[in-house]
Image (tube, rainbow, N blue to C red; front, side, top):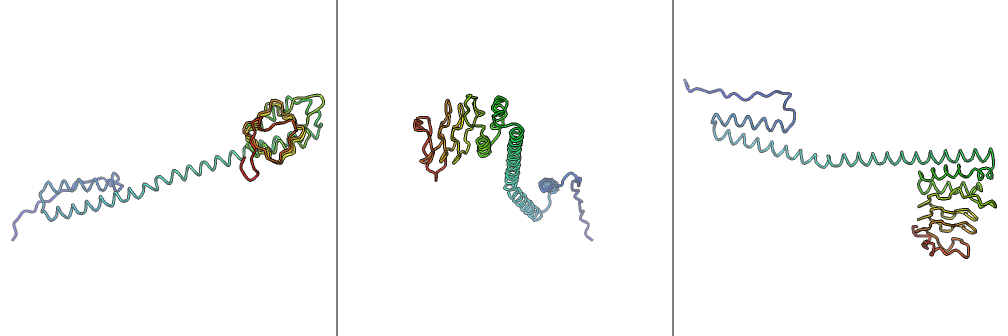
Length: 240
């Protein structure tokens, strides 16, 4: 009969709720390995355990490295989605401002007439300029088109200040527009696209033209020097 004593090796007990990840499992395995080593088991058993530990370590690091690209991609996607939502919200906001302005001005014109609007130009000038400040270049174009077609930009005999006096039209797309005899006194027209526009008889007193564009089809008064005013001559095929 084999009377050799067999000593029972007690392994450390671990709460199941404490170790729930692969990294926790790896740490627990190391603790078990230390406990076994302390009881001086055979070299073959140690070699087997070391092999298991190395395999677990390799799997752990592969999983970590595999999740790193996903960790970077997810915030980028979320940021892109968030930026898209901001752009949609801003576009909706601009469209709402433009729609409200056009409805208000149309109602005033239908109830009164353009001359009465000009007589109260201070109120409508403040409203117009506040709206222009919130709009993008393309929406600014619609405001100018509306005012010109409603005869609210035309110079009057009583020399009323323009509704655009001091207005900021920077970057607006006014290409191909009929602005003949428009009162653009004191208007900031920096980087405005005026290619192929009709500006004959327009009032440009104290207007700012820094880097605004024109071409061979832009119509000016004979005494107006566009380049001296700070404008650039740009072909129709090029960007302003």
